[in-house]
Length: 163
Image 1 (cartoon, rainbow, N blue to C red):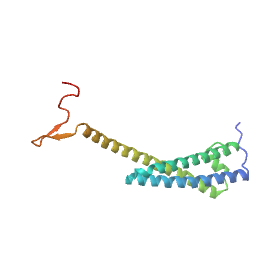
Image 2: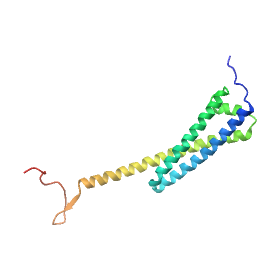
Image 3: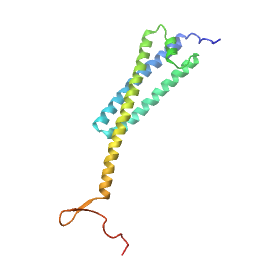
Image 4: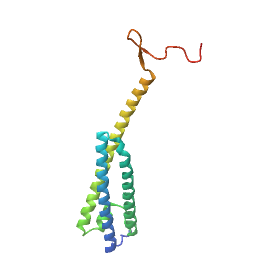
């Protein structure tokens, strides 16, 4: 027979509500950063991406810390880390549940925006690689013009050090 988790105390409900609120705020800021990053990628402002990446990493670490703290709180209350557990603990707290729904939606939006940005980065890298390949090929086989105006490639002469 499976034991049910103990009823949450008002203090544990309040702590969970505060964690959900903090997570919603952090996710909102993280999503705003992802939107800025997308704009930079679309506009080709790659120099500013390094600064955004640093801030994104800091926000991600804070989100992970909040998630871990929520997981510890739920575990200490005898609950699994799940949507169902949060809904069970927050029964009768409609504002907290509404904020939790917002957290879930923000997380989905952030995941989708991050995937888009990853694709934009891959496209930009492929474009840069193609441009670099063209430049390297051109540098390796630079066409020269002879006295009659015809192109000829470099390298038709002797190898250095040979007679």
